[in-house]
Length: 133
Image (cartoon, rainbow, N blue to C red; front, side):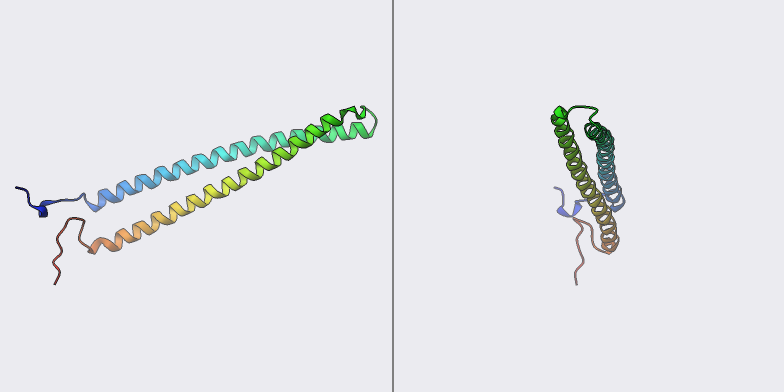
């Protein structure tokens, strides 16, 4: 019959290693998200600049009577495209800030967790009997 006091846990070093791997995976995932968000923002900014340039040329052409005012619908489409780009850039900026905040929280938690683990070294491990007096 096995004694309940024979219960053994892994070593604290192994636990710290596993925790470190988990935090590294989470940090890499957040870095990947941040990179994807930034890539999308860059693409949207490039489209925004192209649409803005097209709109400016069209406004100038209409002002110089180089094209008819029948291009008003095209100007409206360009205006809506510009607004859409700006909204998406703003949304992506909020996402980028959110992911950065998450990464900071993960980093802070990992540091706090290591400190708690270091200070807990004097405590008995899970399953160890204490010698309370």
